[in-house]
Image (cartoon, rainbow, N blue to C red; front, side, top):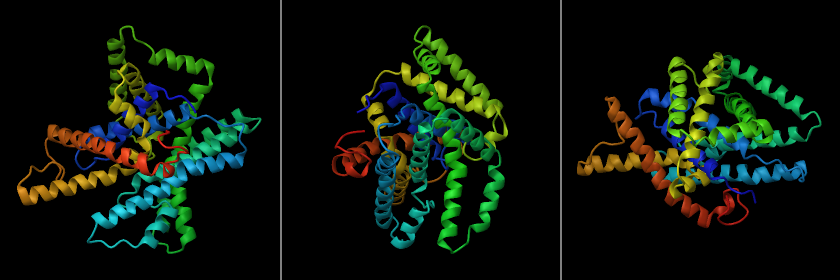
Length: 365
């Protein structure tokens, strides 16, 4: 079993923190939401590529089956889990299981299933990457895929507008093609680039040494941390209108530097932060937090609404706040409370349903 790296788990914690925070769009300040979106998914893809370990001793069929176990089985497990949750929570709205399951097959977003797209996306990326690395001309093939993904992303708005023509079609196969096309153009193409960069930094002796030297800087670490942070902030504020996974990112080449500076800053923060059991635990179990945090959000909103209406409890997670500081308090509070509650969910699923989490043995990650 591959040995876990503490700074990687801490980086995954910071990544999942900002992903969860980035989805508090109704409560948090817009500028912080934009900041989260400027790097959080790219950080996750980069880490996934960095820890990617191609299994050349396995046949392509074995790799495919392994990735189905690791990503597709959890995809449907969490999808069905969310369906049961929705039936209980959304009592006024009857949910037809056949329609819901059809939507799972074509990766169509529902109220709580939005984050699930990442599982089929990383299944596709990791499987294709493993196959590409087996080719004798692997460097050339991967370079072609890189350039193709960048070209696709530059035309994302036009492609998206074209796909909207099929929004109301009733034919299952057309709906499936549309949904998977959206998944590819909006998620996989960009993900392949950052996943590849992460793997490149690990597999290249020069880049791996460069990354290790960067995150290993401890002398004058406060000043170095401040420098990287200011660089990230300056680039982010100079290029305000871009979004890594919604097309605008690739309209300006400087967007790459914003995302890279964000990844660099949080990788360095992960390295200089002391080990913390809570951070490491969530970092090892980001899959569960990633897939269920939208449902957890809604639970706290409904609980807060019930307490507010019946007992005069303060309105924390119901209506949007006007003041910037109030939005910060609400957004970060919802994020922290959701992560704390996730610990209980993680423990329960790891104990009783580990086989559906892409693991062979109980307690493995």
